[in-house]
Length: 619
Image 1 (spheres, one colour):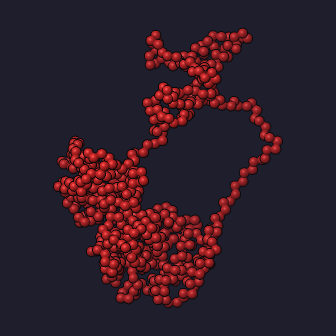
Image 2 (cartoon, rainbow, N blue to C red; image 1 turned 120 degrees about the vertical axis):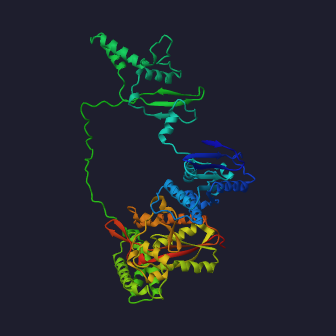
Image 3 (spheres, rainbow, N blue to C red; image 1 turned 180 degrees about the horizontal axis):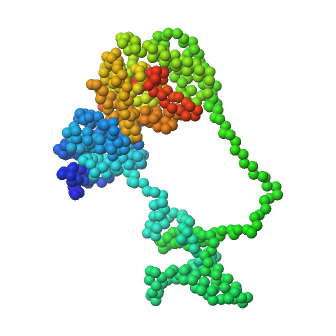
């Protein structure tokens, strides 16, 4: 049952489930579109009070900034997750569906566990994510339509600020075929567009020679040709089953031709009747034009396109025609080293010399400097296809030496008090940086599989997106524990540095990596007494076929940076977000196919970046 009532400020749809019966109400603002009501806060307070009285969990969506454009769905899901987290709801299940419907079902179930009867979402002004014409993007329009429709299916209350009523929203898309069908239908409204041409189907290919001649006379004389079909009079009693005039004319011509004999006197008449009763070869092209005087669409036939008859004998080729000779050549191998210019080669050769000179035991600070300034540029160029055999040999030799040394010394390193900064130390590092910069809240955001070079690109793109909304306060280089898997790093974060000294073999079970839309969501993980936010966009993309191609890393960095920027929009001012990678990955090539290796001790798997971002109130 749907009951409509009026209020002064809001447009809301409320669904409550009572004894397996869905009951809904709808309210539409009486304000005209484009007018801003004088009591927006009062309307919001009314919405919140009604939602709380119904036992709903209120999700207040602050006005999103322009960075959220095309990402409104992720912005809403992030706000719901924060509201559930504040109520003490359990984290999302690992087996939650990757589509929006399954995600909402999981969120409603967790809301019920926390004691709420449903969700109540208040949309503040969406004007900043609208285009210059005051219209929401197609993706954002689809999100708004989906949530309005979901309110009629789930225990959900949706409220809109009155300022949103003047925004344009794209409706459901239509196929091109449906648009053409509407434009060609007789009931379609007239327009001032150009004449429309179409090719009729096989059933419409039969034409009448008399119609063609009449149309030709009309074009020559400039007068309207008489109607070939004629109007049906009251004496015609054929009804709906009576054949059309064209069929009657063709049958009469065939009957008259059958009565005539094929002699010299009547032969010409018999052939004319046969030609008249036979459809012309080919098909007739029909033009639809709009006549403003009559405000109707007039269909007329133009000259038919006649198919050429087969020749009795094929035409001989021209005497000087060249002979066609087809040869299948072997595909040329791509010269990948041509993409590296001379200046880049000289710079990479300098990096290789630094790695060659660095032999023997070195302090940790020297190893970290060689990794960031020499090894990373070399490995990135080689992974992207640079064919430099001498430099590849030097890079691989340094990587093997690093892996051998770190693997052999890790057991002694993890029990020592003096060791490099590791992923397990992220909570302590974040707390120290937060105190230094006067942050009011701290978040740990783990980007699964973000190695050092990819993390630097993400950080640069994120700085370009957020502008002055947030600032990168500190940058760190962290060492991952062995084996370099997500499950080991997450469990060590929960157990703290003491867990590093008490590592056991039961820490090798991998965590489930979200797929599809879930991979672009920042979800919560409970590890020990700590809560960690996790983004699976990198790990999910690398697991896809062809996802290990370094040429696609720039697009992946844009995706991750956009998602992190959308996450920043829902945070309170002076919030410190520690973004870090848990481990990296190595790229192995077999011919033209690239694959990802994780869990080893190579430099790109062990050394990962961390960035401390201060959100809001940044000068």
